[in-house]
Image (cartoon, rainbow, N blue to C red; front, top):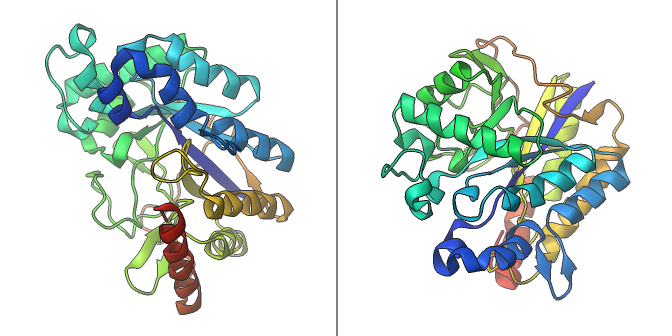
Length: 324
């Protein structure tokens, strides 16, 4: 049985908060978490509705850093419904929120765009503070972490191990130019023990042009997503990790539904539910297990036809909605 980790990075928009400050929380919640539009909602509640209808489980990596500006209640509004509906909550951190923290900054005046911008001791402080906020908001103690912007480094893994975490999922072997600086490369595609943590790479598929492409809902077409899941199952892979976001079914301006991406999400959930030999899994109940670091995981082979279909679909999506 292949375990499919359908992960949702769930986060308020820091840029919106910088423009609107404390007064903008309600609007930020409706835009970034609910995905609210005049045509309906497509954020985490819509996503959980689809998961529930299809009998799937989601892993919601929730960023508690906005508590620096709005307090724990802003995080509890997200955590509560996810926990109540039986999905998984793990820890996500966007350190851009330190720009808004003022005297609440646990590091004093120190700030940075990514967690890798801080030395080991500061990373320990940030992760420990964020975990405490997530638990105060009603989450079980998290065991997995993903850095905002994938911007982790080896000190991040050492800090996670020091604090008792067991898993990280920041390494993106299929994304050239990723902000991730963990000392792993594009050939490291399977969960592995690394610096005291089980590193769970983001899935990837073969790409005719770039060699590899990361498995994200907006980065692959429906055909590629289904093919990648079937390839993982047919190849006997133990797991596969897909990334999406709480706002990913929206246009770039977060005011309209991207109907192409919403349809992709809906149909992929239905396809996953219909596949025998594959099941969605959570880190809490069924965490990925490390394999051999020396064993290269096969990716879905590149296909000019699949690539061409995706590029055509993204061109239409860009024209209509301003995003891929």
